[in-house]
Structure formats: C-alpha cells, structure tokens
Image (cartoon, rainbow, N blue to C red; front, top):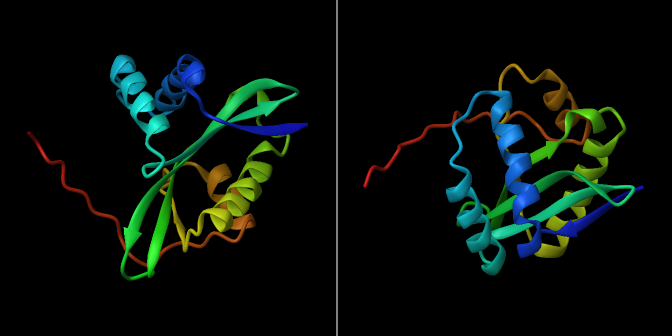
Length: 149
C-alpha cells in the first residue's frame, strides 16, 4: 500500500540520503549539507513547490518533488517534476506509476497548467513509464546558463 506524506523538517535526513543515492546513479555531485539547507528552505516556502515522501507499507522508499514556475505562455503556474526517486529494491512494484497518478491529481488541485520534466537519455525505463502516463516528448530543446556569482 502506497501513501504520500508531505516532506517535513523531520524528514530532511532521510530525503537527503535518498537524494545522495539518486544523484549517485549518474555520478552527479551533491553537497549534502547544502542539500539539507535547501530542503529546509523549500519546506517552509510553499511558493517554491511541494514534495512528498513515498511510503510503502509505512516505510519511506522514495520521494517526489514538484517545483513551481509562473508562465505567461501557459497563463499561470506550471511545475517541474524536479525529482522522482524510488529506491532500487522497491522498483517494479508499480510505485512509479502510482506516484505519477498522485502527482497528476496534486497538480490539478494546485492549479498547475503543465508539468515539465527532464530525463536522462539512457533511462529507457523512466521514459517508458512517463510515456505510459501520457507525458510526451517536448519538441523544444533545453538550454542552460550557469550563473556564477
């Protein structure tokens, strides 16, 4: 049985640990203390987004985070599915699909117009999961600028 619990201050350690696991899959760098600080900021500021622990049989097995953006093109608030992670030993049980269904319902309640996400090119399982839940490949390319201070 799945349950989605809003991430709270007391969950920061477990979420940060899972973030470290998630980032390790593709060898992304992570500063765990900075991550904990960002989680604290994120939790207290509803304007930034919403995040949930994914619980299976009352055990934390993953997390999901939506971040919010305002878009004139889409006439309001949109979201980025910034993080969706399920620990390896819990994959293949339908948790990913159930989480995406939950996020869809949450997006409706939050007045979200569209959800964007990024996916690693090599992650076929994730791509197929998103496609099965009516996500589509976007025709625009992504670009970024790292703003150095």
